[in-house]
View (cartoon, rainbow, N blue to C red):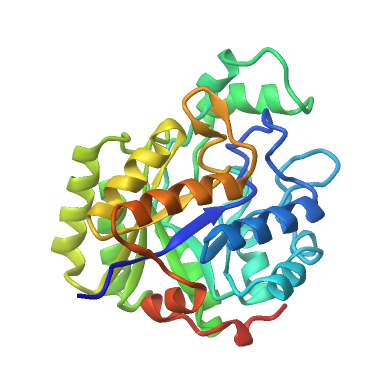
Length: 309
């Protein structure tokens, strides 16, 4: 019997909900490129990318901020590039899809519902901040809404449809799965789809195994065999939920966007360190890590020769 192939995704840079308290979190183009390349070398088949202002560390998703590092990553690896359409909680949907429209990657994220997306408890855990904007932004996140209305989702889906991009449908709660099913029913997305179950973000579903089983069972009911799935556990749930997902024949996502730590109380030194750890776990559990080309086959991607960078 052939071994299970597990796709490892790595979220390199982090959206605005990832404060820069760790010096390992890259925000300059050269550092983003280097960490992405090292993560691919460690076993990540998919690289999930945001970008930040290289001087202030703020999320800045203008397409020109991607241009310095996308060709470098493509030249040095055969990894699948997944460009986020998330960005800051304050960006419009038109701003958020700009990079994907410009560079036509093989994949991009697609958030499947609006939510109270908050990380304000972090403000009480830190007394020193790397940048002067961070403390206020983090404290005020209890008043933010991560907007992804049905109109936003349809707008993004229709504008990106000509690019033949495979969406990573990010589902932070069970209602987002039903939103996705509705969008499929009206023709916005076609099976087979790729779902990223996200656990542990305040405002979304909690990070425990019962919730993973519930989300998976609901997806089975809604989508049958016409989907592939992966798990993202935020914070200290990262490795535990990823390990459980792999045992349930799912795929996994790690990276400094999702957790700054390699284990409880110890900051990760790099994205590659997290990839190497989950790779060891996956292989010790008897599966094989998918290569980028195997990931392309599993997910039905258009190929690296059809991107615009």
